[in-house]
Image 1: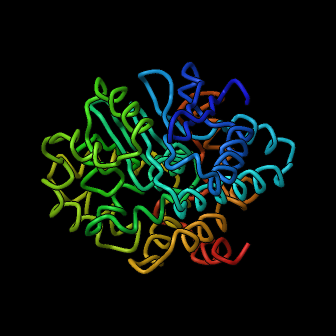
Image 2: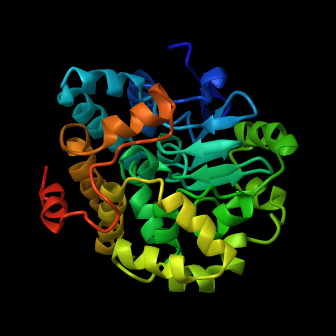
Image 3: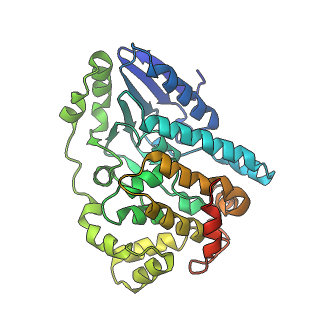
Length: 336
């Protein structure tokens, strides 16, 4: 198996460990395909009773997809590369969400974007004192994807819109409240827990090892976020925040004003089209309608240039917050 991944069977557990700590375990296209193949092989393997996915290093479980190749392909107008990348990645996300065996993810440090897609759809999701989970795609001209819109649509009240538009990071308590994680287990106990799972296959160790993560900022301020993000119109959200004297409003507004208006407008409509009865496949379909067109017709290339390539943090977005044409959004929502 490639050096970026360590795949093995230990006792009753199929183990997948991301091994790119210097790159914050960013997931390459090759890693995506390798994880998918491994999971397919293990589905019918009687020796593998459960899956454990984790990562080397303390700073990140997975900071997202490695988008440098996507950017280079976009410069060459090779939009087919990105379309195939997202199609294959979303297939992996659906596989994890529907996996027939327990899928246990240990998420330390940053878990963002593509990292959410290979962890937060699992059946058992573990966070610790350093965990920071986010879907910051709107900051680079994309929308919350890898099934992230499905997770956001299930968050209580209007908090999913807040998280999707701002890309706010969730600590352990917030992640559990929002439904992105299940158990808070201190990092120092993870080795003992994983070894027990390998030997016994007994999932009850997760609940027994779980501790109180503390107060959730999201839960404590849910009423404000519900009011601020009740509008299904980006301009009205911004107007409410601008007129509010709350420090929470200013923090949210500062993030929104930096993000891509086209992506945020689509995100609002995308989340609103999903419901508690929706499946992850419904969300992935809506996400792909945008991401498959984002390089050629959207602001993805400009977002990556400003954030990753030139690092000037000054993207020149196509539209202003109050001027995203409805017909453009309708075009993006057409089946890809």
